[in-house]
Length: 173
Image (cartoon, rainbow, N blue to C red; front, side, top):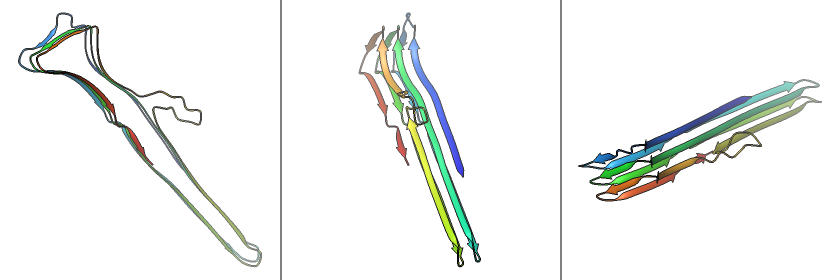
């Protein structure tokens, strides 16, 4: 039997907040960015072999492998209750790219030889991979949050004002 349990929980926040007197970039940009890239690589395997012989021989083999992988994360970039001035760009950006790679294998073999011999074998594998859910059959949704925003603030940009959020999280199993 092989068991693997992995969980990553992280909260990433990058912000400018409460800068009522202002943040000024007189010869450049203001960039508020958060990037998260949690990764789980899980390998779980089990194997068994049973051999019996004789007039009455019984061989039984069993193998099981299980992996439970969970990533719960929040990635936020924001400007709050502040005055921002830049001669170039003002940018808030949040990027999440969580990854779960899970490789699970179970193998079992049994053999018996003789007049009244019998053999049985069972192999089973299970992988439960979650991004934004707690583990278990009754897992609770905890949606990953990826946000870039501005609230209660004034922004003066000499060029572009951009807010972008992206989530490219994925599971390979």
